[in-house]
Length: 233
Image (tube, rainbow, N blue to C red; front, side):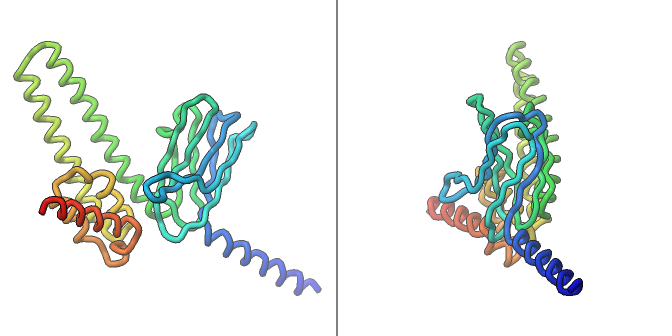
């Protein structure tokens, strides 16, 4: 009898495990949140659709689920009942993704742990934050130059800005090529290089491994490049 119960428990354990691995499970905590609604969303035909939601009333913890076929970007939306929506984007895959953040700084305080694609995206975002901070410094420098009506300083600050933008583009290209076997590569090309020189987009696209070329963002990148080239003919 004990053996039968043990086998039954073991069977149930593996059965539940298989169910969870076939889905995306997003769970975490929003420190300071007492009341609101959390939404799990994804892009479909250029619009965001809600795949799961949870009304928060007292507890700041949440758990949301979605069917998922391959790694792609999802969004965690928060409606705080104050007419202000907040949104966190993250790479998702089958299994558990943990998102912990705060009500005060919902997007900027977000700590995301999940699939390998998110790890790659986290590293990229950490570096891009440095570029963005430097850009803010240059904007301030440029405003001060205009206030002083100093043409030489204005020219210098604008030159620095162009140089920073070029470095940011090149860093993104290099990072994507380095991670050519990861779905993040074509995603970065689409979201960070969409207005860059077509040669940079081609560089990323031509480096992608066969499996990434046939992924969601791999196919979207190819279609995007094809459209740009067709419009130039």
